[in-house]
Length: 239
Image (cartoon, rainbow, N blue to C red; front, top):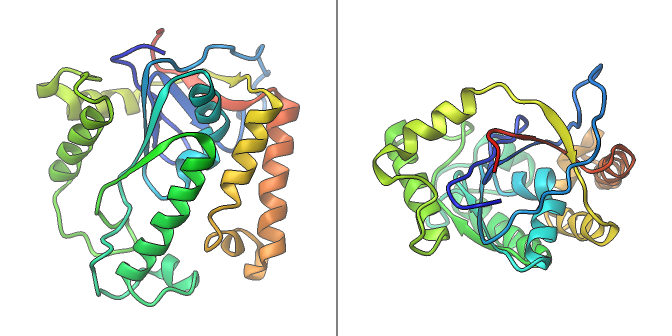
């Protein structure tokens, strides 16, 4: 996918250039079209709200792009402040963390490991998600996202600088048509290994916070994507 493109995930709001992904798969009742074989190329910026969303939704696409020679940067918006001593939000508290800073430090290390397994480089923004008290305006977050995406492109603009935030909002509002992004078995396996790197989160995926059930869910998602032909994606505009 070329420069100046963008992507969106219905599940989590992250963006992989032109590509849009949904962890839950093709919407129920919609016929599954042939798998899409387009590969992200060049410098690819993946915009992820939380420290795991990009990997869980587009891990195989990231692995495939990296393996094909692309430079992939995963930009996480709500990566938390590692220096904060504030009390944990309810989600991080369930994961066993005692403060926002502790959660941010541990989860960033998990993200670093996961991205490394996919051949990507993480870039973290210090904002808290909706489980934390909001201390900045939305406009500040959008501006930081725009700057991070530009940095990820190493000087190459993904969008024209003055209009980045508005263009992101417009893209998110567009209707999308879902398809499957083809991935080889090795890419799906890389995604599975990367997903397991988020050790603090796995118990929260299973009923009763049972780690084995969380791991089972990750395996079921991998099987589902293999059967359906790949990760569920949509193109916001043609590359």
